[in-house]
Length: 163
Ligand code: ADP
Ligand code: MG
Figure 1 (cartoon, rainbow, N blue to C red):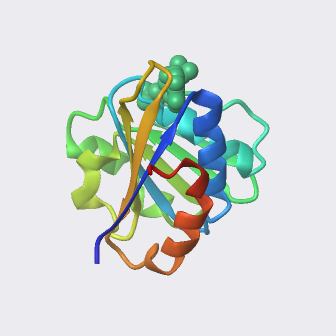
Figure 2: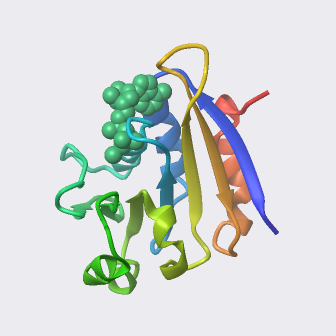
């Protein structure tokens, strides 16, 4: 079964608050695949996840390092694979090992989908709304990992739910 929730935010702090609400539901081994154009708010969303996991360090875009690691309530692996040109680049990251511990967030991760476990949460951010500060976010999942948490996710996102 394929599930989808739509939400909207009105600024970067709002997106971080929304992400923090999602973070409260995260479990060890979870994978979040973030999609959206440059500037859509993928890193902003990840910062909200990090804050909610109790990570004090400033989370910055790992565009050039490919992967950053932080320790909070859960470990956070933050990847940005925008510059990955070949699948073999991503294999250097040893994704299977990364995914074993903590929560992994991959910006532009949709291009890696064939290599990723099917049971991840897709978060798509769209630059869409009445002002430049508005975003629409789509949450979807196909696998089993989120099926049991879907009602809880919908409840957590209620404040931002699209009417
Ligand atoms: P990405 O990682 O998708 O390239 P960033 O998170 O680095 O995007 O940048 C998003 C930019 O958009 C930031 O400058 C942020 O302040 C701005 N912004 C404005 N409104 C929002 C919003 N509602 N959600 C997220 N970011 C927003
Ligand atoms: Mg980014």
